[in-house]
Image 1 (cartoon, rainbow, N blue to C red):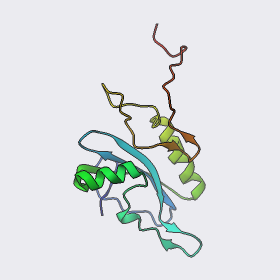
Image 2 (cartoon, helix red, strand yellow):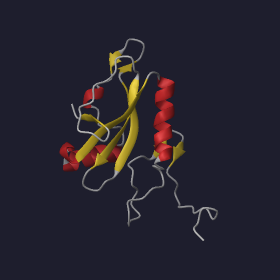
Image 3 (cartoon, rainbow, N blue to C red):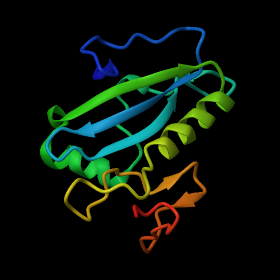
Amino acid sequence: MHWKIRGTRRRFKPNSDKFGFVYVITNKKNKKAYIGCKQYFLGKSKLNSKWETYMGSSKALLQDIKKIGKKHFKFEVIAEYKNKRSLRYYECYFQMKYNVLATTLEGTDEPAFYNSYVGGKWYRPVEHYIDEDQRPR
């Protein structure tokens, strides 16, 4: 299993009272990351979601993993949540907190995150907007 507790080298062991977890996967070579969530079981029949081997849902992320190898990525669990509502809320919370749609890798125009949308509703903008109220004076 490749999941670790964020910021440590300790293997992640799920809490049986929880529904799923929010995670960050980071490309160690270029520092590009992906924030998402994964539930432990699917449907009312509680089928295992195969979270242990899960590597994200971003096509671009999965292509990079295939191209350069899984060993060049960190798979970290940020936190666990007890129900679907909390899980989806905190996935969106962390995606917004780290501004996954607009942040760029330092010194480039390259997106810092593989994420293309937040909460399945808000998409990466086509153009870059600078808020005049936030501009340094």
